[in-house]
Image (tube, rainbow, N blue to C red; front, side, top):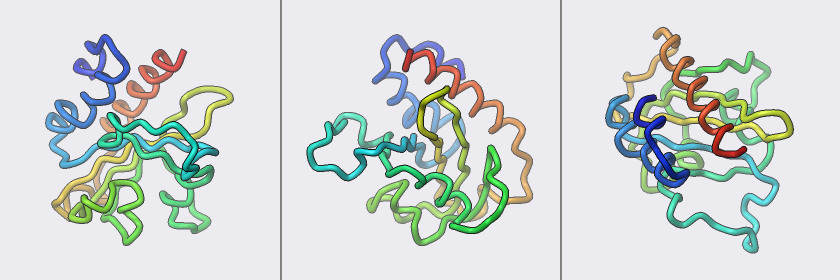
Length: 151
């Protein structure tokens, strides 16, 4: 959280997530997933400098991904092994990610859902039986920082 608080520019804030913050959390990948109506639109502006950390997805993607399309509670933090659809979050080059922590973000009124996805090569790093208090705190701090950047 302190590393994120120190960032003076938005791009540095996001890059710190995939760099120093991921290292501190001992995860192999950290991705910010943002829902957008323009996801997949070839005319939409791309963020090439941030594609290592940001995934843009169509509306409804996050809830469907977290719940696997089932009618189950939508929790703030979900810990599990990855499924076949994890490459939609982490990318084709990160097919070796085997477990994930999915942190739901509320970026404020009128904004679409967002999610932090933390991925690990170790299939047992994130398990449903683990406590989630610290990850929930991290998600809460991150979403407040994002709200400040988004104005």
